[in-house]
Amino acid sequence: MPSIMSSSRPPPARPRVVIVEDHAITADYFAWVLQAKLGLEVCGRAVDARGGLRQVEQERPDLVIVDLTLAQGHGLELTKDITRLAFQPKVLVVSAHDEAIYAERALEAGATGYLRKTHNTAVFMDAVRRVLAGLNYVSPEVMTQILHRRRGQGGLVELTDREVQVLEGMGQGRSTKEIAAFLGIDVGTVETYRSRLREKLGVANSDALRMYAFQWVHLGVRPPGLSIVQAPAVAPAEVRAPTGASPQAPSGSVP
Image (cartoon, rainbow, N blue to C red; front, side, top):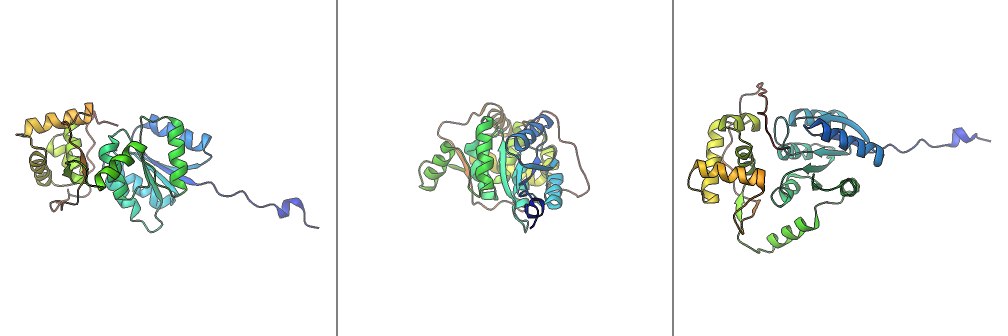
């Protein structure tokens, strides 16, 4: 007669998670909730896009938690890189940035869900569960906005992902050179995006564009009736910055 020990089955493997977040306190909190509250395994952490992709490739997790503003590189581009991998882990973007602007972009980039950091722990846990189950997660308010846009309601200003990232960098006080280094593209390419931003947003000059960017990043202010949405427009051919350089991100970045 077989013993109880020989007939017992090993416990099922816990879902594994990589956290890509440049603020240590926030990453520690995510790790605590994921492990203590949800029983998941945090198998890797990184503070920038390059390190995040390396961790994901090495650990092959079930889920990746990604912030948008990282120590180096942008979380939106990292999400695109992660979702191109053969084993296709699920991605939940958790960020302080405006859902109305970034949620649909994150989904278009391949993320399974988007959550603002202003939500409480219970909402975060629900989002993680849904994403691990293969379900998309965005807030009800953002889903309504997405549906309205796809029905053609309202006049919208269309910006590409890179244009939004350049506008974000300007709002954080980065110079053109710093934005280029942070995004890994050429200074001339950033200037092209800035010119397109002035045209699309209807601002008169660079000073007005910087003020607009600052108000959007720090105050959440946009002109009445203006939304910034995913655009199908073709971006200019980007000139990548030389490889091997790893400039430090300037201080004062929005988390």
